[in-house]
Image (cartoon, rainbow, N blue to C red; front, side, top):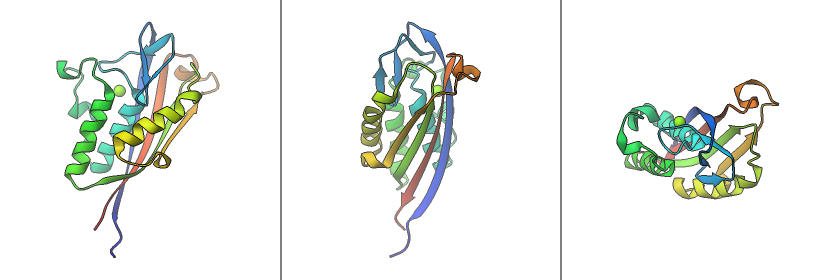
Length: 163
Ligand code: MG
């Protein structure tokens, strides 16, 4: 049997934190006094993941497909954006192999939400939970993340297509 075709993609996103907003991260609502400033629900982890998938497909970026000037995407649940990206992937015959996501956030602590994020993202990408890694780190109080001004996320994905 021929080896499957594989591609990798990387994604990166940042959102600013502000008081009194809901915090959505990895598809899960996080108990937090601060949330993300955004046109959508601000789920910076899903945005980085979408960009990684679009990167693997060489289809541009999330801002191109879901512009923040469009009312259609105002306050949108980012899980819907991920589902739309997954449709683009399936239409072209690809499947997700695995995803690895690193979230840099000083506060609140999000470790206890990681299992739920992994389950949620695995479901949305049609893979087993052990194919989705979510890692949370602080930046040791350094930089804008350390000053609790924002959150930074990196995502890497592998996609494959049976030859
Ligand atoms: Mg974003």
